[in-house]
Every structure is written in structure tokens, then in C-alpha cells.
Length: 199
View 1 (cartoon, rainbow, N blue to C red):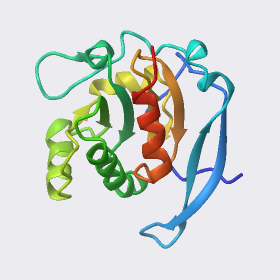
View 2: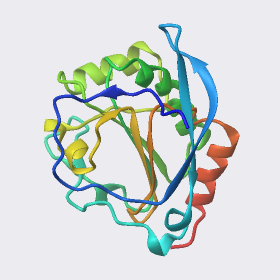
View 3: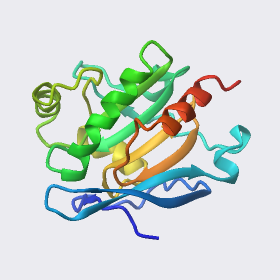
View 4: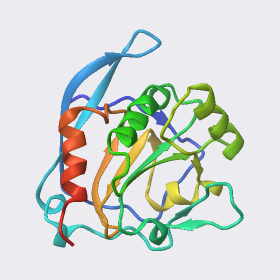
């Protein structure tokens, strides 16, 4: 299996929490990057414990992010919605390509209890992330930031983009490392299934 290309977060060290979930990752469609090399997209296929809601690990309750207000947004703020938390940065070429897919996923499921959270690791914070979303004319995404890279460290993120699919109870369904076409019909349906899933 070829691993997806990611941007390294060299400034981080992660002695802390590592979430372990049984996953099967299969290589799928390849799209060309801006530098002419192939980006090997990962098709997330959950296996075993990730599919069984009772076996999904809860994300740390202290996990939080910022939307530019003075108060951090804890994970509990989003309880009742399916989440796609995507760690990215404007300097990460695979991340930039992926943002359009994330925007379309949020738009495809508009009005449903799902929140795509693009969590920027840019040192410039919210102004940088917000400026990028505006310039790219992304319609459905709103910017979030990860002050001090605290969330990235807590979730053992070592490269960008890295995404976490979280169910309505705040439990980890799947971790995906590398860029992915999130608006593909099977993935949109997978999110619909999670939205309709019983507690």
C-alpha cells in the first residue's frame, strides 16, 4: 500500500495520547499534485471496532478549538452533530487541494447535523485561515484555529492533512492521514448513515 503524501509538522513532538482504532486503508484514485507528482488518496474503510459504536473511543473532553471569539470551543459544543475535524494549513499543498472537497461535503449535507471543522495550523491564526477561505471562494466552510497546536498534540497529529471522523456522541469513528476526495457519493452516504445512526 502506498502511503498518502502529507506535509510534516516538524515543530511538534507527541509523547501524549495516541488514539488507536482498527482501520483498513486501501489505496484508491490518484490525482496529480501541483508539482506534477501523484497524490495517492486514501479511501477510508473502517473495520471492526470503528464500525461498532460501542467500541469507539471517546475523544478527550478537553479537546477544544477557536473560532476567533475569546472563548475556546470545547468538543462538547458540537455534541449531537457528526464531525469531520480536518487539520490543515495554507502552506500545505495537499491540504489546499482538499479544501474544495471539504467545502462541497458540507454543502451537500447542508441543514443536517454535520459540521466540517477545518482546523488551521497556520501561525498567523484566524486571519490567515479566513483570508484563504475567502480567496478560494469556499462557500460552506468557516475557519477554526488550533491555538498552540494543542488539539494536534492531543490527537497525535504528525502530518497535514489529517482528519478525524467523530460521531454524534463525540466518539472517534476513523482517523484518515493524507488528502481525500470527501465529496464522493459513497463518502457522502457514509456521513448520512452516521447522521442517522441511533445513539
